[in-house]
Length: 216
Picture 1 (cartoon, rainbow, N blue to C red):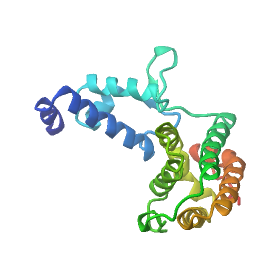
Picture 2 (cartoon, one colour):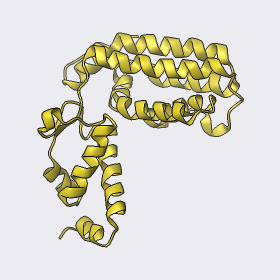
Picture 3 (spheres, rainbow, N blue to C red):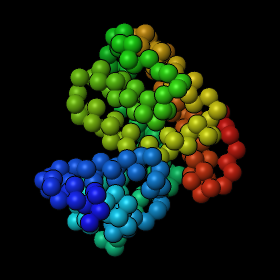
Picture 4 (cartoon, rainbow, N blue to C red):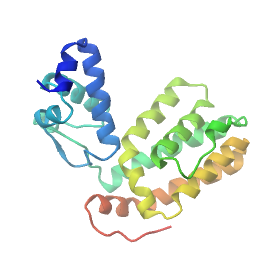
């Protein structure tokens, strides 16, 4: 028995499920399971030292969250959106953020929200967008942004490869949010949306391993 399996044997089923679920979610977010790839529960179980049952249970939960799909109930795979579907995700993300930015003038943010170019871009963007959503006071608004953060994570990892100034762009978003500058925040969120819509073909090309030209 592997160390992970031995550890799982001493854990409650709920704790084992949570461990496997969060590990799978990390693998999806970090590109270890890239969009379009099949997911083999037995192989994943060996990789993360787990029996197959909690892996399947976690995959079913992730399917409900639309991070995994099971076409015709014939195995699991990571969704690979079409250009139209990916644009739809970026548009929906922008609409939710703009609703939050326009609904209430943001209060000056704590220093912890200041973006550092040394931070991981995906995590920094996700945290910033959640904080923008919080100004609505709606937990459902925040959860919707969190779900979009999860679904867009693989593509945000590619954004810096296509947009040379992606980090600077997020730094400005964090700056305007931190200063409570709602007008500039709205304007930059609109620009952020338009730029992502333009680079959708390049992001999908990067997933295919092709050389996509950088665009601004």
